[in-house]
Image 1 (cartoon, rainbow over the protein chains, first blue to last red):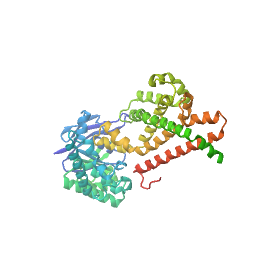
Image 2 (cartoon, rainbow over the protein chains, first blue to last red):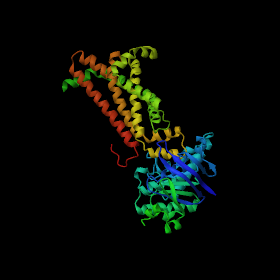
Image 3 (cartoon, rainbow over the protein chains, first blue to last red):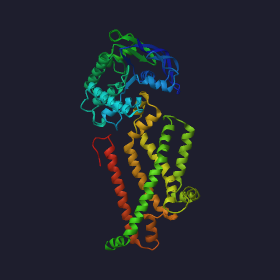
Image 4 (cartoon, rainbow over the protein chains, first blue to last red):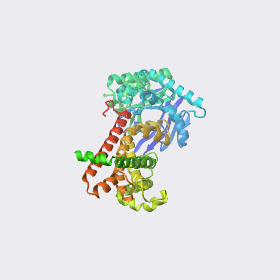
Length: 252
Length: 229
């Protein structure tokens, strides 16, 4: 089943900059999909489209079987609950503890305040869920710590747990390892792969580093100047790169 | 030194009453002015380019109003507002009447303080909340304000001390307070000792306010591990 579908998508910003040019792609359920390219190739724009933070100028975008173009804000917010995002700069709430950070998307989704009992039940559920997720990312003993006291790798683990709290079907990762040392980066990638296998979450990774693709992705595409210059299964791209842009990324 | 201590003891009852008046004017003003200034500051941030609901004309108008009110010297603002004050509180003189010009002077200042505090919040965190489907109200109440609380508290102490300074001028409309006392008992009777005693009392109050709020801000600030108090 396709999870994200782009057909003939073009994105032109109000500044006149053409970030994506007639792009079509399909990401299937359970994929770990890598999007590679230099800065300015259109990677971030693509992620913003997937995350419904931007609308395509032309073409059609379908997320989880529903058209994401020209829909109401409330509907868009509902779809966004099915998408978790992990950022390069972690983007954690600094005034909230690890547990409260993980709980944040659940709080946004709303607490049942109709009955006092429902309210407390919901609170308990959130607490339990946060503990589970902290365990999953290996931070079970850090739930009361504040982000400022954590290392980069630990912060990214919190960000991953937070992105997973609403049990999203899609996990978008924007350069998840770029701010980390190579050893920590490997561990984070291992965790991402684990989530894909354990929870069946479809994962999209944006990166400038083709080694990330080699480590975790099963499918990938290479962006250059807003166009897809190469797309397919990872082994095939890595072993037989057709495009000069891909060859450059591979240091060939 | 002995003289000063004697002056203090002679005037201690008046000093105590006037200190209470000063504190009453300062903290009532700051409390009420925040009801105005906090939403105004949030609004200015949200209406700005790249904000939650950008609107250039309204942002420009609000900015102009804030800048204008902040430019008017307080003494002139107080006199100019006398008719309005009489309309609101029923009288143009006294410490309660002084609250009106004080609040109007403080609110735009607070708005700028709040604006600066919120602008310190990492844009990435706001983007993250947007990507989770947060509504604008949720972004304001759950991200912008809680994340900027340490700065808001520091801004609160700066505002309180500024209003205490302004309240000294409200002697012009018979509002009382330490500043008024310094003028009536000290300046007008050419009694330098009284002035010195009152200044020392004001310095002590300001220091205590500053220490208290610095301590609170450091306690609440989770962004730094090593807390400086």
